[in-house]
Image 1: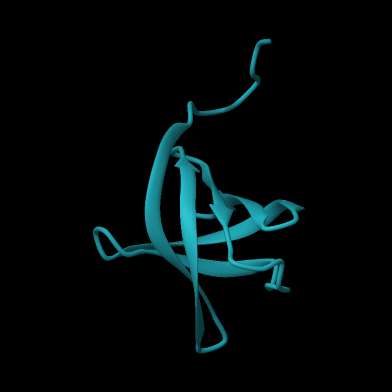
Image 2: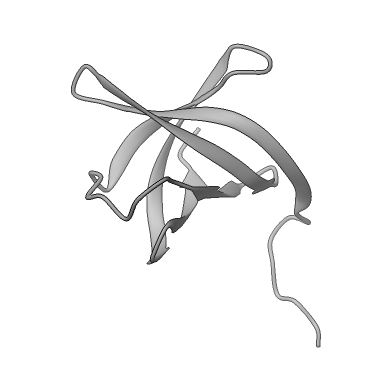
Length: 80
C-alpha cells in the first residue's frame, strides 16, 4: 500500500501536553513528521480544534489543529 503523505512519519513514544485556555492535558505522541503528529490521550475527552502541543522531552511547543479523531487517538497538523 502506497502512502500519499506530505512528509514521512517517525514512530515515537514521547510525553506531551495538549495546552488550551490555560489548561494542560497529558498525552502520548505516537508518531511525528515535519507536518503533524498522532497523539493518544487517556480518555476520549473533548479538546478544542486548535491548541498548542507541548513536547516534554525538549521543551518545545507547536501550534496545531485537529484533522481527525478516533476514540483516544487524535491526528494533528502543525500550523507553523
